[in-house]
Length: 254
Image 1: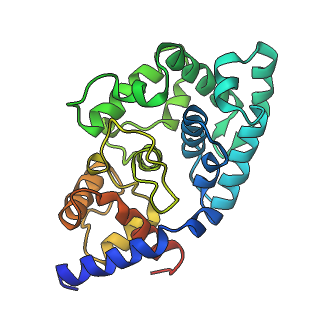
Image 2 (image 1 turned 180 degrees about the horizontal axis):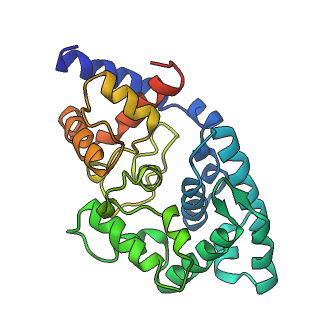
């Protein structure tokens, strides 16, 4: 398929899948249950953290996360008691267990004591950083308190070669325009043009079939390769094509 025709095809598919009904089967429905920025951020961050595997299972586990926090993620994160924190130990989603959950809440509290929201913590007053630098610095801040080494795998670092799919997905949710009712557009200090595609098995396989991606591994180098192509198609909003690639892979078995 020639580049012009391929762009038109992907534009059409992106528009097709970035619709309200996308929420019905996607984990982004969890932060959509909230109204206030800080609740949406935390519900989105925690949901994205466990977003691997079967999507129905992800949604069920994320709903349990919210229930364990009294369906008030911001208030719980800032004001939880020791006994309230203990009940998180019953949580498990694949390799993310209750101890991980407890640490994440404590680390998020440390951050939110110093910052009014996750947006300001993530950008930290530095408008010139690259997205990979933002991600790396946020991760360093996040793991500042004592923790189990195993917990580190639940927050990826692109500087270590990771595709950082879940973190890039969370950033898409927070930064991209809410015009179609899917993403939130809450974060104003970052631009959609800075975002990287949340590369996973589905989007990677479709990208390779369409010859958008040659690298076989779904890693940081593959993200950079795919980003370059998608930015040629739409420099202002390259990650809108996540809907096209994901939709083609999951819903159309492309």
